[in-house]
Structure formats: C-alpha cells, structure tokens
Image (cartoon, rainbow, N blue to C red):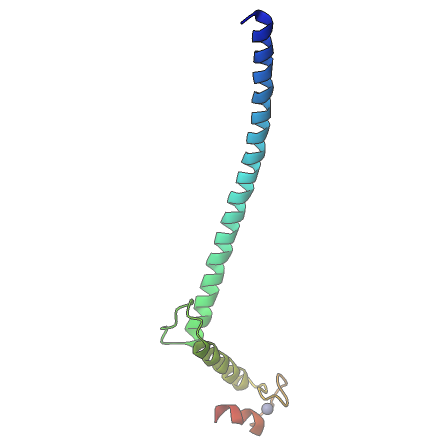
Length: 115
Ligand SMILES: [Zn+2]
C-alpha cells in the first residue's frame, strides 16, 4: 500500500467516523426523548392508577374489585352507585330531568331506579 492509498483510506475512514458520530448524536437525542417520554408516561400511569384506586375504594368499600376487572357487572354496579350518589347529592338521575337540581322532594321517575 503506497502513501496515496493510505491517505485516501485514512480520510475515508475519518469521513465515516464523522458520519457515525452524527448518527450517534441523533440516536442519543432520540434515546433521551424516549426516556423522558417513558418517565412521563410512567408518572402519568402511576397517578391514574392511584386515581382509579381512590374511585374504586369510594364506590366499593369491600375493595375486592381489581382495576383490571372490567366485567360488565362491575361497570353496571359502579354506574348504579354513581347515580345513587348523584341522587343523594340532590340531582335528578331520571331520563326526564337528568342532571337538574332535585330540590327537596323525591322524584317518582328517579325512584324507579332504586326499585
Ligand atoms: Zn327525577
């Protein structure tokens, strides 16, 4: 290998090295973004799980419903409890006056929900 060849190969390697450095830079930026995003999502997930636990605790004192339990029965039960609470707080839950203030008296349409 003569000097010209060696210099050519050397500058070629140098060029590839610079390109590799650029690639590494881009990858590193992406990696940092991914880590930050992952951290953010884990954080958010943690908060949402806690929120879900709080809600589940309030609606189900026995606490035997796992958050992953998405059966229809539990959803209906939670919905029913929610409606009962809204009614207790003084709002209509019937389809006739839904969401409007109930004043003091009971509503016959609402009471149908409680059988
Ligand atoms: Zn009503």
